[in-house]
Image (cartoon, rainbow, N blue to C red; front, side, top):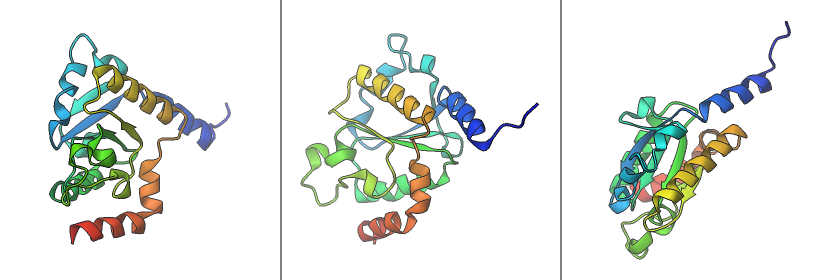
Length: 170
């Protein structure tokens, strides 16, 4: 019997991993309004393998919903760094993308991906449950194809991320 190559092993791991995603929901504002509906029997995100979880050490997905201000950014970075690899970040709603309705506030962070790597954004204010499910399915495709590699980018470009974090947090 031949040994599996590292690439074959990764391919099988990604195929299995995409159907068992534990999600840590970091709600910073109104972003949690549509998410509970996705867990109900009508949409049932668990049938796709996405399950809400409560600790960063066991979560695969960090779902950042709502606006991110300078106080919460520090906590989001801490939570992200506590998660084990492979880990994925989903920016949920307009606020993590561009500040949303708070775009002109000095205290609101725009472009979350300057501070931690974001694998997927789900746009909208607030995204509908159908868009959330579609987003999770797209994340699963990225994982399966080996393209959801934000955690690797974070390590490779750590100084870039840390410098951006320092500019805001100090």
